[in-house]
Length: 175
Ligand code: ATP
Ligand code: MG
Image (cartoon, rainbow, N blue to C red; front, side):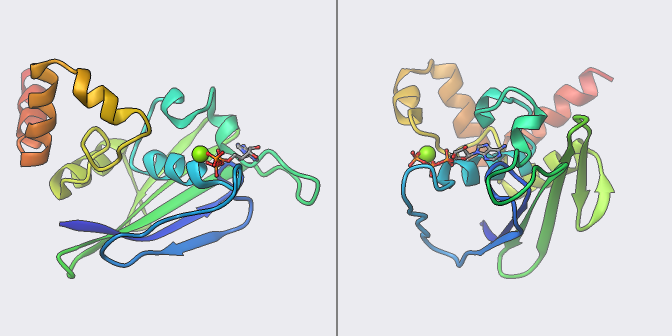
């Protein structure tokens, strides 16, 4: 399966300066005092994977995603997050998302401009989507216990790799 190899942030929420994190296969743990930016990292990861819901990013607008300034540094005009995902120790893929104060978003696949749909397609093929089990938020365990059998089935389908075919079918039906 795919794993998150490199994670780069610049201007995203509290990460004013370019910050690069390298991960190895296996379990990595991020620890730090309250308010140091742990949840902001999770927000950045969801965001670069295509999240469209501000609520899920603990924000109200694009501006909340961009570094708003501190005593030491002035506000920035854009936020940029990149991830490198590695698949089966072979192919690597780099996803990038930028946002400007105007609210304009840009998506890049291996440093070339692309559509959000291209990012979604790549992630679906890697089994690394947003809607799946890849990111388990606080409170999600309770949610899993409460959802309907139909919703549980959707999650299982995502895990089994069926969802990409369902999405393709729906796309075709709506053309
Ligand atoms: P906890 O352990 O309490 O959950 P945490 O490490 O998860 O803390 P975060 O929620 O990631 O902390 O970070 C919160 C900090 O990020 C706050 O200090 C907040 O002011 C800062 N922050 C959030 N958005 C921005 C922004 N747009 N510009 C600058 N700072 C921001
Ligand atoms: Mg937190």
